[in-house]
Image (cartoon, rainbow, N blue to C red):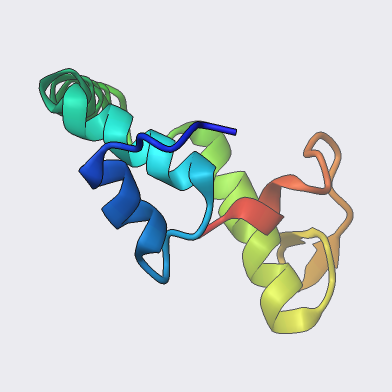
Length: 102
């Protein structure tokens, strides 16, 4: 029990329909109190993500293998690599990698 004295902002958040949970109200008040910290962390994460994607290659040697596996799986229903007219089983790829191929 929090007692009879509740701050007006907490009371307003608690009375809002989508924010019925006390946890959500606590998180929202934490973000509101320290918004510069959260904004700084979000911008730093965005900067790191953009910087790391600009210096790393977009397509590596393995990317072609996984793209071929995913294409064969989607188009033919066969998990394998294309070799000439046949689709053969892969020799080195893990079966779950093409599931995450965009």
